[in-house]
Amino acid sequence: MKIIHKLRKEIISKRISYLHDLKKKDIDASLSSLSSFRTLLFNNFSSNADNIKNKNIKKKINKINFIYQTKNFLYISRFSDVNIIGDVTEKNLKKYNRIIVVWSKAKDFSKDGEYYNNYFNISSARKDNLWFLIHADSKIPKKIKKNIIILNQQKTKFGFNIFLILKYFFKILIKRKFILRKVYHELSFDSLIANNVKKFFNEIFSYYKPSEIIFPFESQPFQNALIHVVKNKKKDIRLIGYDHSSNPFPIYNTYNFDSPDILYVHSQASKIFYSKYLKWPKKKVIKIASLRINRKKSKEFKNKIFLPYDFYNIDEITSNFKLFLNCQKEKKIKPLKVKIHPSRLNSKKHLILQSRIKKIIKNHRDKFSKNSTLSFSIHVGNTSTAIEALESGSSVIHIVSDPIFDLFSSQFWPALKVDKLSNNVFKYTIKKLGKCLIFKNKSTNFQKIHK
Image (cartoon, rainbow, N blue to C red; front, side, top):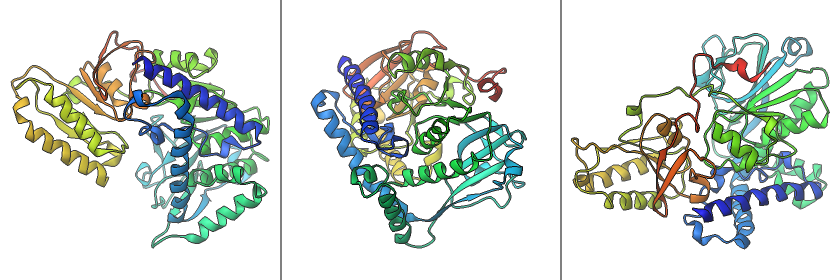
């Protein structure tokens, strides 16, 4: 595990130097979809940390970035247009002292046009908040309240929209004066959204000035673009980020010139590793109880296998699960159920993985017994649920796809005891409850993260 920690430090260093290099080359990192090193892009970085050498890291990052950028650019063709919906007049906007910027889906709206956000656990009913929503759904609510503005990503009904992809390409080509290294960074759907966000806020800030902007911070391009607009215009607007997850290695949130003024986190571990490893000034990282995660009973996690939001290699996951079961004694484990991530219940590859795991369980039925006293909570890939399970009193097994990006290491999470069962299977126990996650409590509310 020492090599994993060493490689993590090297990757952090490379991201910091990468951002500074972009600045030297006059490349707008805030609009780049390559600058964040998003974890979900790299959780197939390497299935074995021993195979990664420092000199290979940059080449591997560039390769993954290129593949992702190509796919993300072609993804634009699935949309017919990107437009803004809502009342953006000066008269309306000046009613609101605060902007909350988040994603939305059709299911988040009530029939009368109210919006509810799960990250902050609040609705749009409070009248001094203006909601700017990046809408990730083809279905648009029929009604929206005056304090809601939607950036609508309208998908095509049939086939592909080559016109939009060409229109965006030539727009960036001209904007960046045909300098291809600059153009390359913005050839993606993520950058298309970021450019639209930047344009919108540049326009409204000419006549509207809120006191603060709040968002769940993941260094997504549209967030970076918004931060850049505020800082570039030298507006006296407080930028507040909230890390709503318990990511094992949130490299994407390394501190830089496009980071918010304040970052709220919900654990002592996060507060420490953000300042110690991710280079955040200590005074900018503030610990609070989670705004959304309630304490669950341990039975909610025990005897279950939790699949992540995304993954890359089904064969690798099932192979590691078999390896784990083969090491167990007969009749020693309670029967297991497979749980798909709530946002991916209809995902074809998740259903395939679920089916494959169920088949493995059936073929290893001799390992299970309802009378066993040994219960496991098994978590797969890049996930936050392992921490929730540990803090709820469960014994956790983690099957990682990529040890560098998926592992909850004791360096980042010192309250954990980590035992390596194989290269990609780890057992976690928690030394002291409350250090890795502070659950939502009666006094926890949105007011905690703004004044």
